[in-house]
Length: 473
Image (cartoon, rainbow, N blue to C red; front, side):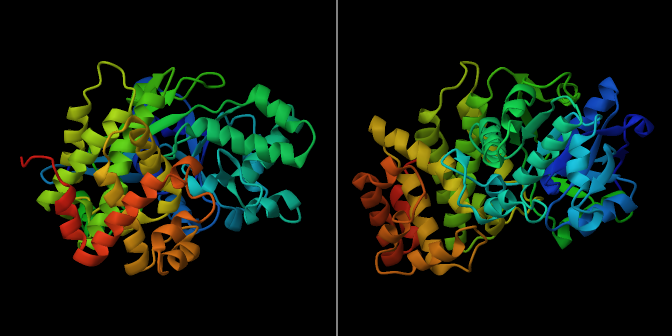
């Protein structure tokens, strides 16, 4: 059965290349582009987007070009489906297809006002809150013997051309799930610029803004089933379409060079301080997701919604959110964290999304510090229990040992460490895995080791039953 489509609500002929979005994948299509699409319908304007990828994805960008930049977003749960046509794109760019100079030249162009980033945690090439100068790709970009390959190198090359041409500053807005992502992006860009030498870093400090943001919408990887669902609902195929949940939230620090795009008119919240919203989402939603990814896989589950059908696991996730994560937050008084957690559980149960646990588990070494290690540290300091968090870390180590390899920038060293006689000690002995004060805390390592040994001896289901104290619904 076909479903009515909300058409593009503005005149696309007015669009100009005002925004560059680097890392234009599924989340970019289903989240910031939806806000902009709706905002342009309310406020109008010429805020067109150039979608860019740096490594893979050239073919996907060409497919968007072939569709004149138009695609559909399907917002679905178990009972409902809504379709919108998104028309904010006015071009695409890929170095392998368009040449290495195309992106720096675009960043230098006078019309460009904003760079959006969805490049995942590892794309920033940082360590300890600063640019990782030992990162091989960063070292190669700094050597300057070939065009830059990292997002940070490309951005600095473009800013250098922008300054040389007498251009004004612009805004760089991260949409990745990292604490204080604006400050982290700023540190990476300035670190690279300073390493290059000269006074470019001084110009960036004066002229470029790096607002933080918190993004929230579950956007799983597309499957044959989700593609078929969209085709049936549209009445025709759209190979560029994305399926996601109906819920969306975007909280942005109000810190732009000049007038921002109409994100607020599209439903985003512009605030002086993103941190409380960011911490709540990172710890409750993302922390729960990472826990489900590893515990769920060891239980033989494949998707998040499958996990919600496991009553002990569902109760454990609610316990994690409300008893272990929520006490570490500093939220505005009007935020109902219990309602937020229960809404998350409802969202996790969305059977339409088929959100794969293996997808969520990717890059876990980059996600653990903000999602689980940091709140564990706060709970240890306050003397509060953290049994579900311990289960999540132990399940991660058990998964590294027993499950099929998961994509992670540290995959090989993690798997080797997990295969030894004392995998907990070996994992925590790896450099820069988490905060030193936590990794060196015997109370932390001993607790994780106890739970890991319990998983090894009695199985994950028994370990789960032992830590769940959340009452049955």
